[in-house]
Image (cartoon, rainbow over all chains, first blue to last red; front, side):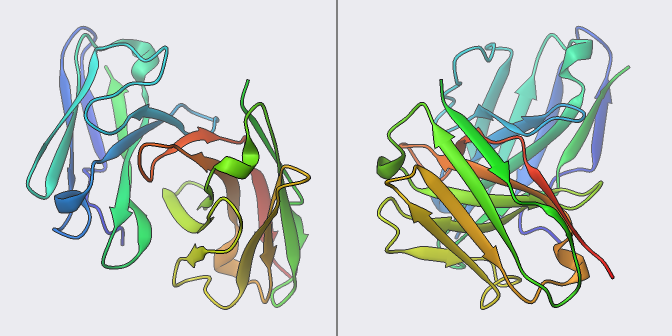
Length: 110
Length: 119
C-alpha cells in the first residue's frame, strides 16, 4: 500500500491528452512540491518534472503538472507511442520523515 | 556527465548479509544527499534510505530500519548500503540516486543492481 495514490493505468490515443493523478495528505503533497518520474520498459526511472513545473533538459513541454491541496496531476499532451511507460509521483513526507512514492501508473498509448 | 554505477547485488540466503556499492562520478559527490530506492520485480518504486552530504545524518524506511545501514566515503565518491538479516521481501532492484539541490527529488538514477533473497 503506497502512501500516495495513483490510478494503476491510463490510456489514450496518439495525439490526445492524458491526465495522471496523485493523491496524498497534508504532510506530503500538501506541504511539498511533487516530483514525477518516467520509467520506460526495462530501464531505470528518470526525473520528468519537479518543483514548480521545472523540467530537466530534454523533457518536452508536453509534460506539465499542477497541484491543488493534497493532490497533484501530471498532464501529457500530444501523446506519442514513445510515452508508453510507468509514471510515478513522489515527495517528502514531513510527518513520516521519509520519501514517499505513488504506486505507479502504466500509460498505454493505443 | 553524472554517472551512478551500482554493484554488489546477487543471490543471498534469508538472514544473510550483502553490501551494495554505488560509484559516483561527474559531479561533486561530497555536496549531495544520496538515496537508495528499490523496486521488487513487477512492482513500484519504494524508497529505502537517504544520507546527507557529510554522512552524519541518515533516514530509513520502517521496513529496513535496524537492518540496513547507508554510509558513504566522500574521498572515494562512493555510497554504500549494508544489508543485514535480509528477508525474501527485500528481493528487488536497488537504485542509487542523487538528490537534487532543489528539493527531495532524485535527479539522477543509476542503472540498478538486483538483489535476490532466496534459499
